[in-house]
Length: 129
Image (cartoon, rainbow, N blue to C red; front, top):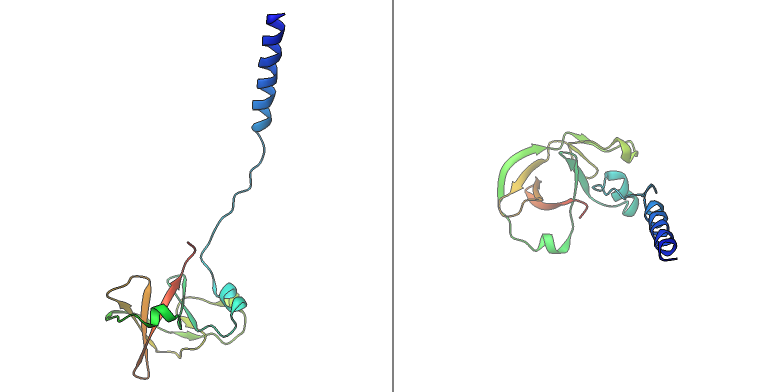
């Protein structure tokens, strides 16, 4: 009788363990927001794309920072005019004109400083996190 109970317990344990194996698990993959997502959430967002990342401005806590322009990293090369956010690419902006200079911020990675018409604006990178 003890052997039967032991066998039954082992078989039950075996089926339990086998039942836990082999199920497909679905994992969520996070990604950084793209222009399509940002503009879907706020059609008036002021954004540009640099090195595959979207930057946005008019964020209160970022605007309160006192930052120093670092190195020139580039400039806006193309306006976003076709209305298809999937076509957004590096150097493209929806509100800044071509030729607008983009600088790093010495104090804060993840913020770029844009200079246009003698005015500086801070743009924060949008990343998943």
